[in-house]
Image 1 (cartoon, rainbow, N blue to C red):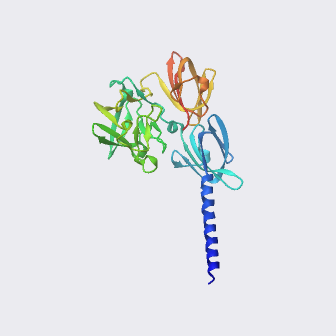
Image 2: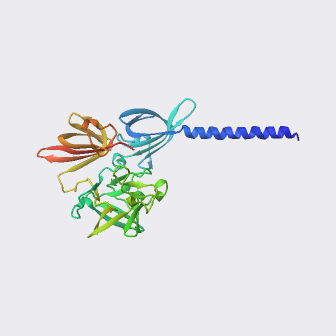
Image 3: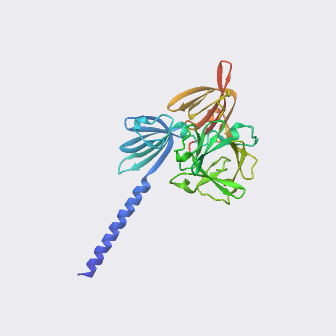
Length: 326
């Protein structure tokens, strides 16, 4: 056999193989994601609101569509749901190949959760039930009657009103580390499989840190028992994990959803696909990502928790807590 021809053929094969690998890598890199809020669905398209601006995306006929983790049809998606759209590029077009939507209630990251600097064992919003479920526990707010839930693999947290011991996102392991405890989520895959509850995401808010580290004081907690309940406090801080949600027997009410519009003394909030127009008090406490702001500063598509107060025959919003979509 002519060795020069053999080497030439081998070199051509290697070059061709490298080209295929390079093309595949380029194809994978061409995929991108759009994260925002569902504005509308129809005619094989989805309109997603991102930072207040709408993007219209074509959806592939065989796209993988899910609602709250379950397979669904494109038409099943609700206005106001949080959504992540994976785009694929072909030679001359871009289309949505995967759509992952979460209902407004499930998508609101950390809405309702905060640290109360006035630690008070008589305050129901600071007390939690640790409901035993095999090797795990459910962390249930006494006042909100809702379970602490890992929203997704970004480590977001929220209070799920549908307490479900079969939902792995609501199950936690308590690991003793000396005088403190680490609170570790039970999730079967992804970055959170080795994570732990952390007291500070850089903005003073709780989240799940992908790296469980017992040397990190923010991941160590004191679990102080008060009767059948517990106060959950981060190491080295005189604060307690609490919820904004009011008790059912109180006059205040909490509306959680997504901002559709804000201005002229009113805010429109999308909850499970339906808009609610709420009157905002002139002296209402309005914040965006924890910082005081004007009502008009709130962006369409932001997650929001609105506290309502009844006064005579009218109901007004006295507190508006907004958070941008992650």
